[in-house]
Amino acid sequence: MDFSFTEEQLMIQDVARRIAREKIAPSAEHFDRTGEFPLENIRLLGENGLMGIEVPLEYGGAGMDPIAYVLAMIEVAAGDAAHSTIMSVNNSLFCSGILKNGTEAQKQKYVRAIAEGSAIGAFALTEPQSGSDATAMRCRAVRQTDGSFIINGKKSWITSGPVAKYIVLFAMSEPEKGSRGITAFMIDTGRPGFHRGKTEPKLGIRASATCEIEFADYVVQPDEVLGKEGDGFKTAMSVLDTGRIGIASQAVGLARAAYEATLAYVKERKAFGQPIGAFQMTQAKIADMKCKLDAATLLTLRAAWLKGQGQRFTTEASMAKLTASEAAMWIAHQAVQIHAGMGYSKEMPLERYFRDAKITEIYEGTSEIQRLVIARNETGIR
Image (tube, rainbow, N blue to C red; front, side, top):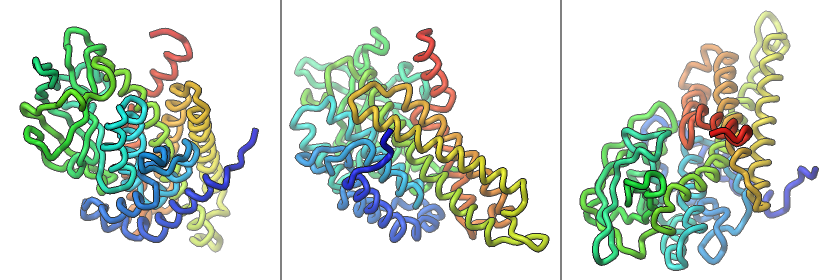
C-alpha cells in the first residue's frame, strides 16, 4: 500500500496548518469564552480554498480530492474544533449534496458563494422531536398549483444557523410515503417566512453557532427543489456518509492536539525527581493514546480514499467516525488526567479539548447509530 501524499495534497495541508497555527489557535480561547462566531477566520479559510476543497474550480472551489479534505480538516481541528465544525458543514453537508443533486444554476448560485467564503451554508435535518429518527420529521412542504411549496415547521441544532445565508432543508412533502416523501429544498434565509431562534449555549465548540430555525409559510419556488421530489431522505443519508468523514477528521485533529500537548508535558513535568513520562502508568497511557490516534487516522484516510475512488464507503465512514470520535474523547480524557490540576484549569487548552471532543460522539450520527450502520451492513439484517 502507498501511504504517501501528492504534492497538491501536501500543499493544502500546509496552507491549513499555517492558518491554524497563526490565526485559529491563538484566537481559540477568545472565541470559546465569548461564543462569538469567528467570521474573519472563516473568510480567511474560504479565501484559501478551504471552504470548498472538493468543489470543482468552475464553482469556486479548490478542485481537490477527499484525502486533501481530510488532511486540511485535521490541521484546522488541531487549531480549534469549532472552526473545523464550520468548515465541515460547508464542505461536507452543504456543498457535496448540491454538487451531486443540484442543477447547474443551483451549483453556480449556492456552491460558489460558500466555496469562496463569501457566505455561510447550513444543513437542516434534525427537529426537536426527531434526531436519529429523521423520518419522524414534522416540517411540512405543501405543493401549490403553480409548482411552488409552502413550508411550515421547525428544525433544531442547526450548525451555523445563526449566520447562514443558504440552508439545505429537508421537509415532508408527502407524509403518507414516509421516508420516500421527504424532499430537499434550497433556502435563502433573507426571505420572508424564515426565523432564527436563540443561539444554543453549548458545552463545547462554542464558536460554532447553533440555533433552532422556524418556517412560517415560507415559499419555495420550483427551481429551489434540490434533486427529485421524494428523494430527500436518500440525499440526506448520502451527504451524512460524506459528513462522517469530516467529523472523523475533526476528531483526529482534536485528538492529535491533546496528544501532542500531553507528550510535551510528560517530558517537562517532574515528580519524585524525574519526568512523569518515566513512570510506567504514564507510559502506558501514552502508548494507548498513540495507538488510538493512528488507528483513527488510518481508518479516516481509508474512507476518504474509497470515496475518491468512487467506491461505496458507508461502512468505512461509520467505522472511521466511530473510532475517531471515541478515540478523541478517550485521549482528551487521559490528557486532562495526566495534566492533573493544570488539565482542569482554563489556563491550558486541555479542558477545551475535553469539552469539544464530546460532540464528535453525537452529531452526524451518534456512536450508537454508527454501530447500527456497521452491524447492519455487515450482517445484512435490518
